[in-house]
Image (cartoon, rainbow, N blue to C red; front, side):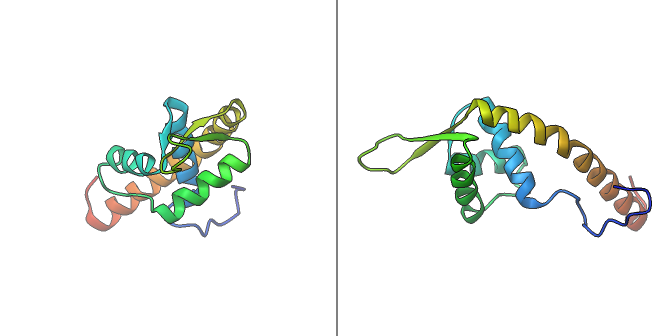
Amino acid sequence: MAKNERSRQFPSRLSTTSFARLYILHLLNQKSYYGNAIMDEIKMRLNGLWEPSPGMIYPMLRKLESDGYIEGWWEEPDRRSIKNYKLTDRGYEYYKRIKLLYKDDLTDSLKMLKLIKEDIYKEP
């Protein structure tokens, strides 16, 4: 952000959608997952403090797949019940770019929330 530019985003400069996209790619960089497992994994890793909705995850998975960042396959193609996803090479390059791009936003959000907590509650 430029020196005299005001930030109107609160409490994070990173949107929920951008955060969820980054986290999905982060998880798929580690191993393959299906949609519900992604939601469960995010909820578990964030100690239940936030859980993405199916209405956010599934359209995002379809978009990431159509953009060529992830690849999906049906566990049982005839039944089409569980679709697993993995990161593609193109997706890995995209993940590395947004991981670097969002790092400062996440850091700034943490600092801002810490300052707000200290100011309002007078505790670190």
